[in-house]
Length: 307
Image (cartoon, rainbow, N blue to C red; front, side):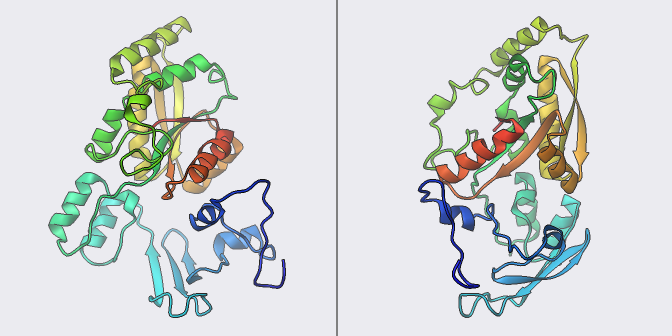
């Protein structure tokens, strides 16, 4: 490092996607002189805006960074993010003009129609993102150390039901990468259908799953009872509820366990869970960015891809 304005990254191998990883917001660089505790409440960075104020569970305010590297930017003097736990309330706040933007992941296909009808002046577009719902299974905790149970869980899933309920069919079924034609690296549908649990005959897959569970001693009168942990926000809870309904098809009885965000991430990091429902992704359609994150990093949480 030469001076206060230069940093050097020493890589273990050539990585052409380094800049994309840094720009994608999933590889933050922290100043070593600022503690982790301070970064949680008064973060320090070099972006277009500077942290100004945090009102716990109410709002976060950032102001224009006069030292930003690009002259004349940003255009805005400040941004205030209002924390509104209720999805319906947040949408009404947008429609009424109390807020200027909404968080994209909170707007479902039915809500998008309502927004367009009640706020015709709003700019609303349904765009594809490389975001997936993921079934997390802790393979270190019995009985999930048995790969046959994990296979039965995968065979229970009706991915078309997920897309139909969550997005009225606008979501696409894919593997790790953004599906074609929007994605350049996504698995072709004819190959994806050969992967366990992705075949077109959902009932056939579920019958295989039921046979597996019955061979292990489970059945309609003796289901495997589990807790399905997830973040206590709508985009996660919606997926978890559908997952629980799917798992019933192979004699797995799930109980929803919604967790506050901080608790959720701590539990996941400590692997203090059995089954979890996760929603995450990245806007960059790059194999190194997505595969590194989805398999090398998330493998620590023993992830099984759902959508």
